[in-house]
Each structure stands twice: as C-alpha cells, then as structure tokens.
Image 1 (cartoon, one colour):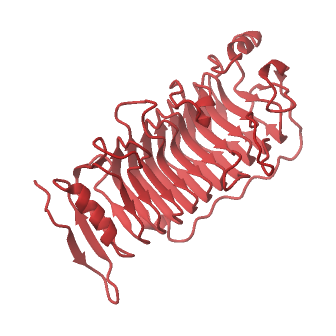
Image 2 (tube, rainbow, N blue to C red):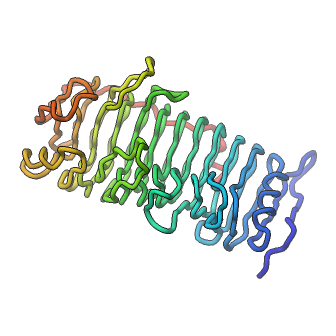
Image 3 (cartoon, rainbow, N blue to C red):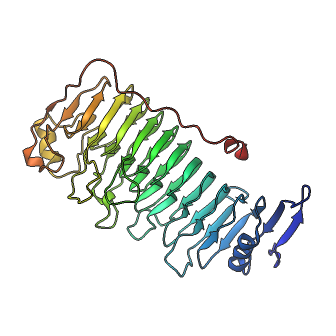
Length: 396
C-alpha cells in the first residue's frame, strides 16, 4: 500500500511535554519525510519506520537527544542508499541517549551508521550491509560510534565493510555483544578506546575477526582495559579488500584476534578455528610515528582458556609461508612478535615468538622460537563494563 504523504504524529503520555510517536512509511518522498521527522522530533519522541524499502538519495541526520528510531525489523524495514548521491554516511547521530533499533541500512556510499559525540547510545537489532559483497568501494564502517561514552551494540549484523564491520573508536565504556560480523575486512574493532567488553559475538569470514588497536596521532590514545571473551572467531578467510593506505590493509588474511599497541587486554573463553594465519596475533605498532605520548607496545596482555581449532596453515604476511615451512608446515595458534611488557598466554597450545626487540624491526631480524611466558599471577583482569542504568532496559 502506498505510503501516506504526511508524517503522522500522535500524542501520548502526560503533560507538560508529551512524548510522541512519529510514523514514517516508505514510498514517494521518503527522503524528505524521514529527514523532516528526525528534525521535528523532540526529546522523548519515537520515530517509527514502516515495513518496506525506503529508497533514499542522501544521508540522514539526527541531533535531538532522547529519540528512538525504530523499524519493523532488520529484514522488514530497509533504508536503501543504493541511489545515494553524496559520499557521506547513511545515518549520522550527534545527540545523546538515542536508541536505534529494528531496521537495516544497505549500500551506503560512506559509512553505514555513524554516531559522534553521542553518549549513552544503543544500537540494537540492526543490519548494515553492502549487498554486492566485499569490495574496496564499499563504505568503511558499518556501525561506527566514535568519541562517545557509554555505548551498547547489541544483536547487530554487519556485512561487507571495507574497514571494520563494527568499529568503536576513541570512546570509553563500551559493550559489543550478541552480534555477527562477516565478510568485512575487520569484523569488530576496538580502537583507541578505554574499558570495553566484547562478548558473545560471531566474527567469521572476515579478513581479521576481532582487532584491538591503538594508533598514534589521534585525539585519544592509550587504549586500555578491553576484555574479549566468549566469542566465536572462526574461518576468517576473506582476502583483504581494504583500500591501500588504510591501517587495516595490513591485517593478514586469516587472523582471528589481533591485539596491537594496547594495554590490559584479556582474551579468554573464545572459540578460535579456521584462521589461516593464526588464531591470536600479539604485536606492537610497526609504522614510524612522531607522537611523543604514544606507546607502540602491548602491555599486560593475557590470553587464556580459549578453545583452539586448526590455524596457521596459510599465513598471509610477508615471509609467513617460509616461516611456516620452517615450523613444519603451519604456524602455531598464537603468534607474538616478542615485544611488550607482561604478555602472558596460558592456552594449552603452542605459542610462537618472533623474538623481536622492537616492533619496527624487519621480520628478517626475527628469531622464531616457542614462546615461554612467566609463571605466577596474571596481570589483573579489567573490571566488567557497567553501563548506566536504563540503557539495557530501553531494548527489553
């Protein structure tokens, strides 16, 4: 049935300012009607998206606090940007206490859904996808909260991002859970962020499954306190399709978890298998930098109690094949460059150290050998992330 031309608005609840439900249906002029609804929304309002395809030609934006944008389900309400004229993201949120739920975003020219400076944001039951499969011309990030505090990403599916499917950058107090990231370059990436729990997710058929990075020359550096646990990180076998020059373009195809230049990262209780380079890669930052505050090393990184399947049978970094041949045909499930402080792996599998003294040394300087880690007490595990009361309740 054709969509109503006007936005329907209904008043609910009590004075002094009643929260409203603003209903928007797909159909002619969907671009203008939906953007108008997002502009007209007041704090406390819900903008509902009807079932069907919204054929959109430009990005959308929301800058009103305490708005919920709700669809009929990620397979029923689709915001299609196949006809997008500009190069920006599909949806940009710059306000606080926003809930995004129950819809899909497809084929944006830039990022899928970005939120910036948006505290206490909830992403729930969403799908972001580039339907043509992995391509360098796809948008960089699927779900992209940045420069924010208190972030919940829950039951999200992302496919085809040319950088990271789920990317959280320069933020703090983060939970990413129950989501699926597949056929991206990086499935899930936590970058330059503080206090994150990444658990109960599936990261499969990406180039790399879950990355925890810290990079120099960004407004927030010194990433720390990340727990990666109870995830399924398997079969990350999609050839790297990131545009040249992108940092994730250096991620070897077939990497399960990669921790780089971060502190207090604990990787435990995950299932890792089918990752051709290795299941867990622990490294320092290898590029030149001039940020005097930046620490390129990993510190207090713990790998324990993970279940490992086949790994290391197709190492996709320069010299990897030769190294695997020297090791008997495969690399161990854990590979460490040998740099950093208080790095400990307690999984019941072999770990390999390259025994570099500096992460920027060429791999020709490596002296590969079985890694030996110190006995005794492990570095302390980061505290569980606790989000503000009410965030989880908004999606129950």
